[in-house]
Length: 397
Image (cartoon, rainbow, N blue to C red; front, side, top):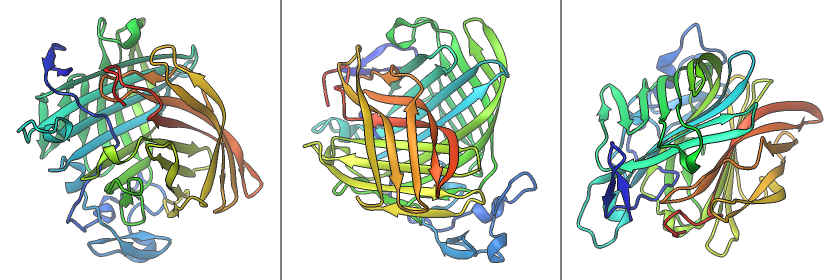
Protein backbone atom coordinates (compact mmCIF):
# COMPACT_ATOMS: atom_id res chain seq x y z
CA UNK A 1 0.00 0.00 0.00
CA UNK A 2 1.15 3.53 -0.49
CA UNK A 3 1.65 6.54 -2.65
CA UNK A 4 4.81 8.12 -3.91
CA UNK A 5 6.71 11.27 -3.08
CA UNK A 6 7.71 13.81 -5.72
CA UNK A 7 10.76 11.77 -6.71
CA UNK A 8 8.60 8.72 -7.37
CA UNK A 9 9.62 6.75 -4.26
CA UNK A 10 6.94 4.74 -2.52
CA UNK A 11 5.66 6.18 0.79
CA UNK A 12 4.04 3.45 2.86
CA UNK A 13 0.73 3.84 4.57
CA UNK A 14 -1.40 5.99 2.23
CA UNK A 15 -3.89 4.91 -0.38
CA UNK A 16 -5.61 7.76 -2.19
CA UNK A 17 -9.00 7.04 -3.67
CA UNK A 18 -9.33 8.68 -7.08
CA UNK A 19 -12.81 10.16 -7.35
CA UNK A 20 -14.67 13.10 -8.82
CA UNK A 21 -14.48 15.66 -6.02
CA UNK A 22 -16.76 18.39 -4.78
CA UNK A 23 -17.49 20.51 -1.60
CA UNK A 24 -19.57 22.87 0.34
CA UNK A 25 -19.02 26.59 -0.14
CA UNK A 26 -20.73 29.45 1.57
CA UNK A 27 -19.67 31.83 -1.19
CA UNK A 28 -22.41 33.17 -3.43
CA UNK A 29 -20.74 35.74 -5.69
CA UNK A 30 -20.53 34.23 -9.16
CA UNK A 31 -17.84 36.50 -10.48
CA UNK A 32 -18.38 35.62 -14.15
CA UNK A 33 -19.77 39.10 -14.91
CA UNK A 34 -16.35 40.57 -14.17
CA UNK A 35 -14.48 38.75 -16.95
CA UNK A 36 -16.08 40.23 -20.05
CA UNK A 37 -13.52 40.92 -22.75
CA UNK A 38 -13.49 41.57 -26.45
CA UNK A 39 -12.01 38.10 -26.96
CA UNK A 40 -14.93 36.26 -25.42
CA UNK A 41 -17.96 35.31 -27.48
CA UNK A 42 -21.58 34.92 -26.47
CA UNK A 43 -22.99 36.32 -23.23
CA UNK A 44 -19.71 35.97 -21.35
CA UNK A 45 -20.75 38.49 -18.75
CA UNK A 46 -24.19 39.80 -17.79
CA UNK A 47 -24.80 42.01 -20.83
CA UNK A 48 -27.93 40.12 -21.92
CA UNK A 49 -29.37 40.82 -18.47
CA UNK A 50 -28.16 44.39 -18.19
CA UNK A 51 -25.67 43.27 -15.54
CA UNK A 52 -26.27 40.78 -12.70
CA UNK A 53 -25.39 41.62 -9.10
CA UNK A 54 -23.23 39.46 -6.81
CA UNK A 55 -24.59 36.01 -6.07
CA UNK A 56 -26.24 35.70 -9.47
CA UNK A 57 -25.28 35.14 -13.10
CA UNK A 58 -26.99 35.69 -16.45
CA UNK A 59 -28.74 32.73 -18.07
CA UNK A 60 -31.23 33.11 -20.91
CA UNK A 61 -31.48 36.87 -20.14
CA UNK A 62 -32.37 36.29 -16.50
CA UNK A 63 -30.23 36.76 -13.38
CA UNK A 64 -30.29 33.42 -11.54
CA UNK A 65 -28.67 32.34 -8.24
CA UNK A 66 -25.06 31.16 -8.13
CA UNK A 67 -23.38 29.12 -5.39
CA UNK A 68 -19.93 29.67 -6.95
CA UNK A 69 -17.71 32.65 -6.17
CA UNK A 70 -14.95 33.38 -8.68
CA UNK A 71 -12.00 33.64 -8.60
CA UNK A 72 -12.00 32.46 -4.95
CA UNK A 73 -13.63 29.11 -5.71
CA UNK A 74 -11.03 28.32 -8.37
CA UNK A 75 -8.54 27.84 -5.51
CA UNK A 76 -8.27 24.82 -3.16
CA UNK A 77 -10.94 24.36 -0.47
CA UNK A 78 -10.84 22.85 3.00
CA UNK A 79 -12.94 19.97 1.75
CA UNK A 80 -13.10 16.23 2.01
CA UNK A 81 -12.20 15.81 -1.66
CA UNK A 82 -11.44 18.05 -4.63
CA UNK A 83 -10.20 17.83 -8.20
CA UNK A 84 -9.19 19.98 -11.17
CA UNK A 85 -9.48 18.30 -14.55
CA UNK A 86 -8.57 19.31 -18.10
CA UNK A 87 -9.02 17.35 -21.32
CA UNK A 88 -8.76 18.38 -24.94
CA UNK A 89 -7.84 17.77 -28.55
CA UNK A 90 -4.77 19.15 -30.30
CA UNK A 91 -3.21 19.22 -33.76
CA UNK A 92 0.02 20.41 -35.34
CA UNK A 93 -1.74 20.61 -38.70
CA UNK A 94 -0.84 17.03 -39.61
CA UNK A 95 -1.34 14.72 -36.63
CA UNK A 96 -3.96 14.83 -33.90
CA UNK A 97 -3.60 14.23 -30.17
CA UNK A 98 -5.79 14.21 -27.09
CA UNK A 99 -4.68 15.04 -23.56
CA UNK A 100 -5.72 14.80 -19.91
CA UNK A 101 -4.28 16.37 -16.79
CA UNK A 102 -5.90 15.98 -13.37
CA UNK A 103 -4.99 16.98 -9.82
CA UNK A 104 -6.74 15.49 -6.79
CA UNK A 105 -6.63 16.14 -3.07
CA UNK A 106 -8.39 14.13 -0.37
CA UNK A 107 -8.27 13.89 3.42
CA UNK A 108 -6.01 11.11 4.64
CA UNK A 109 -8.32 10.32 7.59
CA UNK A 110 -11.07 9.61 5.06
CA UNK A 111 -8.86 7.24 3.13
CA UNK A 112 -7.48 5.34 6.11
CA UNK A 113 -10.11 5.10 8.90
CA UNK A 114 -8.53 4.89 12.32
CA UNK A 115 -5.41 6.77 11.27
CA UNK A 116 -5.27 10.05 13.27
CA UNK A 117 -4.17 12.24 10.37
CA UNK A 118 -6.24 15.18 9.12
CA UNK A 119 -3.77 16.08 6.41
CA UNK A 120 -4.30 15.77 2.68
CA UNK A 121 -3.06 13.33 0.07
CA UNK A 122 -2.54 14.36 -3.55
CA UNK A 123 -2.58 12.67 -6.94
CA UNK A 124 -1.37 13.70 -10.39
CA UNK A 125 -2.60 12.07 -13.62
CA UNK A 126 -1.25 12.96 -17.08
CA UNK A 127 -2.23 11.30 -20.35
CA UNK A 128 -1.48 11.86 -24.02
CA UNK A 129 -3.57 10.19 -26.73
CA UNK A 130 -1.97 9.82 -30.14
CA UNK A 131 -5.27 10.04 -32.00
CA UNK A 132 -3.60 9.43 -35.37
CA UNK A 133 -1.70 6.28 -34.37
CA UNK A 134 -4.33 5.32 -31.77
CA UNK A 135 -1.91 4.96 -28.85
CA UNK A 136 -2.43 5.98 -25.22
CA UNK A 137 0.36 7.11 -22.86
CA UNK A 138 -0.10 8.02 -19.20
CA UNK A 139 1.52 8.83 -15.86
CA UNK A 140 -0.21 8.48 -12.48
CA UNK A 141 1.23 8.87 -9.02
CA UNK A 142 0.64 10.47 -5.63
CA UNK A 143 2.35 12.49 -2.96
CA UNK A 144 2.04 13.72 0.61
CA UNK A 145 3.66 17.04 -0.23
CA UNK A 146 2.89 19.17 -3.29
CA UNK A 147 5.72 21.20 -4.76
CA UNK A 148 3.43 24.26 -4.98
CA UNK A 149 -0.03 24.67 -3.43
CA UNK A 150 -0.90 28.36 -3.50
CA UNK A 151 -4.30 30.08 -3.49
CA UNK A 152 -3.03 33.58 -4.30
CA UNK A 153 -2.00 33.30 -7.06
CA UNK A 154 -3.58 29.92 -7.76
CA UNK A 155 -0.59 27.72 -8.55
CA UNK A 156 -0.87 23.96 -8.01
CA UNK A 157 2.00 21.58 -8.70
CA UNK A 158 2.12 17.93 -7.68
CA UNK A 159 4.71 15.65 -9.26
CA UNK A 160 4.35 16.10 -13.04
CA UNK A 161 1.12 18.14 -12.94
CA UNK A 162 1.47 21.93 -12.95
CA UNK A 163 -1.63 24.15 -13.08
CA UNK A 164 -1.60 27.96 -13.09
CA UNK A 165 -5.27 28.94 -12.73
CA UNK A 166 -6.56 32.48 -13.26
CA UNK A 167 -10.10 31.98 -11.97
CA UNK A 168 -11.52 33.58 -15.12
CA UNK A 169 -10.87 30.90 -17.73
CA UNK A 170 -7.34 31.87 -18.77
CA UNK A 171 -5.02 29.15 -17.48
CA UNK A 172 -1.67 27.53 -18.17
CA UNK A 173 -1.29 23.78 -17.77
CA UNK A 174 1.82 21.62 -17.96
CA UNK A 175 1.95 17.83 -17.78
CA UNK A 176 4.88 15.42 -18.20
CA UNK A 177 5.17 11.67 -18.76
CA UNK A 178 8.88 11.13 -18.06
CA UNK A 179 11.00 8.37 -19.53
CA UNK A 180 10.95 5.48 -17.07
CA UNK A 181 7.74 6.59 -15.32
CA UNK A 182 5.17 5.91 -18.04
CA UNK A 183 2.31 3.48 -17.46
CA UNK A 184 2.42 -0.04 -18.90
CA UNK A 185 6.06 0.40 -19.93
CA UNK A 186 5.11 2.44 -23.01
CA UNK A 187 7.55 4.89 -24.55
CA UNK A 188 8.04 7.89 -22.29
CA UNK A 189 9.13 11.42 -23.00
CA UNK A 190 5.66 12.88 -23.57
CA UNK A 191 4.29 16.15 -22.25
CA UNK A 192 2.49 19.38 -23.02
CA UNK A 193 2.67 23.04 -22.07
CA UNK A 194 -0.54 24.84 -23.03
CA UNK A 195 -2.12 28.25 -22.63
CA UNK A 196 -5.91 28.01 -22.38
CA UNK A 197 -8.36 30.86 -23.00
CA UNK A 198 -12.11 30.56 -22.65
CA UNK A 199 -14.44 31.64 -25.44
CA UNK A 200 -17.56 31.14 -23.29
CA UNK A 201 -18.66 32.03 -19.79
CA UNK A 202 -18.37 29.72 -16.82
CA UNK A 203 -20.98 26.91 -16.73
CA UNK A 204 -22.85 26.23 -13.48
CA UNK A 205 -23.88 22.58 -13.36
CA UNK A 206 -27.06 21.92 -11.44
CA UNK A 207 -28.21 25.43 -12.31
CA UNK A 208 -26.54 27.16 -9.36
CA UNK A 209 -23.29 25.16 -9.39
CA UNK A 210 -24.30 22.34 -7.00
CA UNK A 211 -25.13 18.75 -8.02
CA UNK A 212 -25.94 15.55 -6.13
CA UNK A 213 -23.37 12.77 -6.25
CA UNK A 214 -25.58 9.70 -6.54
CA UNK A 215 -28.70 9.33 -4.41
CA UNK A 216 -26.77 9.05 -1.11
CA UNK A 217 -23.29 10.39 -1.78
CA UNK A 218 -23.85 14.03 -0.92
CA UNK A 219 -23.50 17.35 -2.72
CA UNK A 220 -20.81 18.47 -5.13
CA UNK A 221 -19.88 22.00 -6.11
CA UNK A 222 -19.25 21.77 -9.84
CA UNK A 223 -18.45 24.24 -12.59
CA UNK A 224 -16.79 23.98 -16.01
CA UNK A 225 -15.26 25.98 -18.80
CA UNK A 226 -16.63 23.97 -21.70
CA UNK A 227 -14.86 25.70 -24.62
CA UNK A 228 -11.23 26.74 -24.17
CA UNK A 229 -8.87 27.63 -26.99
CA UNK A 230 -5.56 25.82 -26.52
CA UNK A 231 -2.15 26.80 -27.85
CA UNK A 232 1.32 25.63 -26.92
CA UNK A 233 3.84 22.84 -27.30
CA UNK A 234 3.43 19.06 -27.33
CA UNK A 235 6.53 17.09 -26.38
CA UNK A 236 6.96 13.65 -27.94
CA UNK A 237 9.83 11.13 -28.04
CA UNK A 238 10.54 12.53 -31.53
CA UNK A 239 10.69 16.17 -30.47
CA UNK A 240 8.53 19.19 -29.69
CA UNK A 241 5.65 20.35 -31.89
CA UNK A 242 3.64 23.59 -31.80
CA UNK A 243 -0.04 22.72 -31.41
CA UNK A 244 -3.45 24.36 -31.26
CA UNK A 245 -6.84 22.98 -30.35
CA UNK A 246 -9.65 23.11 -27.84
CA UNK A 247 -10.04 22.00 -24.23
CA UNK A 248 -12.56 21.43 -21.43
CA UNK A 249 -12.01 22.24 -17.74
CA UNK A 250 -13.89 20.80 -14.73
CA UNK A 251 -13.52 21.72 -11.06
CA UNK A 252 -15.37 19.89 -8.29
CA UNK A 253 -15.05 19.86 -4.51
CA UNK A 254 -17.12 18.83 -1.51
CA UNK A 255 -17.96 16.64 1.43
CA UNK A 256 -19.55 13.76 -0.47
CA UNK A 257 -18.79 10.10 0.25
CA UNK A 258 -17.50 8.03 -2.68
CA UNK A 259 -18.14 4.85 -0.70
CA UNK A 260 -21.89 5.35 -1.18
CA UNK A 261 -21.76 4.30 -4.84
CA UNK A 262 -19.75 1.87 -6.98
CA UNK A 263 -18.96 4.05 -9.94
CA UNK A 264 -19.99 6.67 -12.46
CA UNK A 265 -20.04 7.30 -16.20
CA UNK A 266 -19.31 10.82 -17.48
CA UNK A 267 -19.35 12.39 -20.93
CA UNK A 268 -18.10 15.75 -22.19
CA UNK A 269 -19.05 16.70 -25.75
CA UNK A 270 -17.99 19.69 -27.85
CA UNK A 271 -19.96 20.10 -31.07
CA UNK A 272 -18.75 21.82 -34.21
CA UNK A 273 -21.73 24.20 -34.18
CA UNK A 274 -20.84 25.66 -30.75
CA UNK A 275 -22.95 23.49 -28.43
CA UNK A 276 -21.55 21.47 -25.50
CA UNK A 277 -23.08 18.69 -23.42
CA UNK A 278 -22.05 17.24 -20.05
CA UNK A 279 -23.79 14.06 -18.82
CA UNK A 280 -23.17 11.79 -15.83
CA UNK A 281 -24.78 8.80 -14.19
CA UNK A 282 -24.10 6.88 -10.96
CA UNK A 283 -24.47 3.17 -10.18
CA UNK A 284 -24.99 1.70 -6.72
CA UNK A 285 -23.05 -1.27 -5.37
CA UNK A 286 -25.53 -3.65 -7.00
CA UNK A 287 -24.81 -2.11 -10.37
CA UNK A 288 -28.19 -0.38 -10.52
CA UNK A 289 -28.46 3.03 -12.17
CA UNK A 290 -29.58 5.44 -9.43
CA UNK A 291 -28.84 8.99 -10.63
CA UNK A 292 -28.61 10.84 -13.94
CA UNK A 293 -28.04 14.52 -14.64
CA UNK A 294 -26.36 16.81 -17.11
CA UNK A 295 -26.11 20.22 -18.75
CA UNK A 296 -26.77 21.50 -22.27
CA UNK A 297 -24.76 24.62 -23.22
CA UNK A 298 -25.85 26.63 -26.25
CA UNK A 299 -23.45 28.65 -28.46
CA UNK A 300 -24.06 31.78 -26.34
CA UNK A 301 -23.23 29.97 -23.09
CA UNK A 302 -26.81 29.62 -21.83
CA UNK A 303 -27.37 26.42 -19.86
CA UNK A 304 -30.28 24.00 -19.63
CA UNK A 305 -30.13 21.45 -16.82
CA UNK A 306 -31.07 17.78 -17.15
CA UNK A 307 -32.04 15.66 -14.18
CA UNK A 308 -33.77 12.33 -13.57
CA UNK A 309 -33.65 8.83 -14.99
CA UNK A 310 -36.02 9.85 -17.78
CA UNK A 311 -34.00 12.93 -18.84
CA UNK A 312 -31.82 10.90 -21.18
CA UNK A 313 -31.09 7.30 -22.10
CA UNK A 314 -27.62 5.83 -22.60
CA UNK A 315 -27.27 2.48 -24.39
CA UNK A 316 -23.75 0.97 -24.73
CA UNK A 317 -23.24 -0.82 -28.04
CA UNK A 318 -20.43 -3.18 -27.04
CA UNK A 319 -17.99 -4.17 -24.28
CA UNK A 320 -14.21 -4.16 -24.03
CA UNK A 321 -12.17 -6.28 -21.59
CA UNK A 322 -8.94 -4.65 -20.43
CA UNK A 323 -5.84 -6.83 -20.78
CA UNK A 324 -4.29 -4.79 -17.94
CA UNK A 325 -6.94 -4.91 -15.20
CA UNK A 326 -9.45 -7.47 -16.46
CA UNK A 327 -12.17 -4.85 -16.14
CA UNK A 328 -15.13 -4.99 -18.51
CA UNK A 329 -16.04 -1.55 -19.88
CA UNK A 330 -19.14 -0.58 -21.88
CA UNK A 331 -18.08 1.33 -25.00
CA UNK A 332 -19.72 3.17 -27.92
CA UNK A 333 -22.90 4.77 -26.63
CA UNK A 334 -26.19 5.68 -28.22
CA UNK A 335 -27.52 8.65 -26.25
CA UNK A 336 -31.03 10.05 -26.60
CA UNK A 337 -31.90 13.32 -24.80
CA UNK A 338 -35.53 14.44 -24.78
CA UNK A 339 -34.68 18.11 -24.38
CA UNK A 340 -34.28 19.61 -27.87
CA UNK A 341 -34.51 16.11 -29.42
CA UNK A 342 -30.87 15.00 -29.34
CA UNK A 343 -29.97 11.60 -30.85
CA UNK A 344 -26.21 11.05 -30.51
CA UNK A 345 -23.66 8.33 -31.16
CA UNK A 346 -20.48 8.61 -29.07
CA UNK A 347 -17.68 6.32 -30.30
CA UNK A 348 -14.42 5.54 -28.51
CA UNK A 349 -11.55 6.55 -30.78
CA UNK A 350 -9.97 3.23 -29.80
CA UNK A 351 -10.41 0.74 -26.97
CA UNK A 352 -7.30 0.78 -24.80
CA UNK A 353 -7.50 4.16 -23.05
CA UNK A 354 -7.56 2.75 -19.52
CA UNK A 355 -5.54 4.25 -16.65
CA UNK A 356 -4.66 1.41 -14.22
CA UNK A 357 -4.28 3.09 -10.85
CA UNK A 358 -3.33 1.84 -7.39
CA UNK A 359 -6.29 3.74 -5.92
CA UNK A 360 -9.05 3.50 -8.54
CA UNK A 361 -8.55 2.21 -12.06
CA UNK A 362 -10.62 4.01 -14.68
CA UNK A 363 -11.11 4.49 -18.43
CA UNK A 364 -10.60 8.01 -19.76
CA UNK A 365 -11.05 8.02 -23.51
CA UNK A 366 -11.05 10.36 -26.47
CA UNK A 367 -14.27 10.09 -28.47
CA UNK A 368 -15.84 11.19 -31.74
CA UNK A 369 -19.49 12.19 -31.90
CA UNK A 370 -22.16 12.15 -34.61
CA UNK A 371 -25.94 12.39 -34.57
CA UNK A 372 -28.80 14.85 -34.83
CA UNK A 373 -30.45 17.64 -32.85
CA UNK A 374 -34.07 18.12 -33.87
CA UNK A 375 -33.29 16.24 -37.06
CA UNK A 376 -30.31 18.47 -37.97
CA UNK A 377 -26.96 16.64 -38.31
CA UNK A 378 -24.36 17.40 -35.61
CA UNK A 379 -20.80 16.24 -35.03
CA UNK A 380 -18.01 16.83 -32.55
CA UNK A 381 -15.40 15.43 -30.19
CA UNK A 382 -15.29 14.65 -26.50
CA UNK A 383 -13.98 12.60 -23.62
CA UNK A 384 -15.67 9.85 -21.62
CA UNK A 385 -14.81 8.66 -18.11
CA UNK A 386 -15.84 5.26 -16.72
CA UNK A 387 -15.20 4.10 -13.14
CA UNK A 388 -16.25 1.11 -11.07
CA UNK A 389 -15.68 -1.47 -13.79
CA UNK A 390 -12.23 -2.66 -12.71
CA UNK A 391 -10.35 -3.19 -9.47
CA UNK A 392 -7.46 -0.89 -8.62
CA UNK A 393 -3.93 -2.14 -9.09
CA UNK A 394 -3.99 -2.80 -5.34
CA UNK A 395 -6.97 -5.11 -5.86
CA UNK A 396 -9.50 -2.72 -4.32
CA UNK A 397 -12.82 -1.58 -5.79
